[in-house]
Length: 123
Image 1 (cartoon, rainbow, N blue to C red):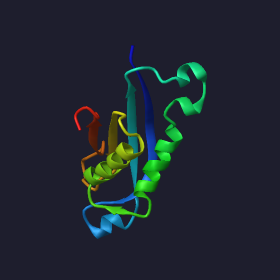
Image 2 (spheres, helix red, strand yellow):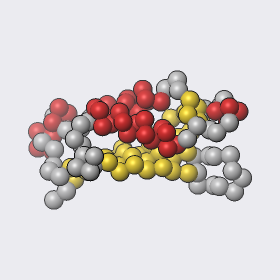
Image 3 (cartoon, one colour):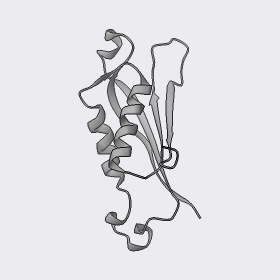
Image 4 (cartoon, rainbow, N blue to C red):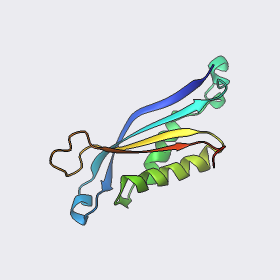
């Protein structure tokens, strides 16, 4: 049996874009992060936060990684957050999706996403 903790639609504003003009107004970016478990976390039985992964800490980590920073690319945001996730949750696989909701391209209505799949076994 496999289980997974998922953070859906963590929404924040980020200074993001190729041009200075685009970066001057923070844009909505949505983060989805999934942490698969090979074995269920002990918190499933104990009902203690210390026995599982705290999604509040993950959200704080995302916010601290991007706050007061400016980015040109969603790829770079994903790389920075991925690095922090690896550092704080060592040896835990994850899937990170960064979604720029409204890029300034006239007929692009669904935004753009960039995803990183990390498995400690793969490096």
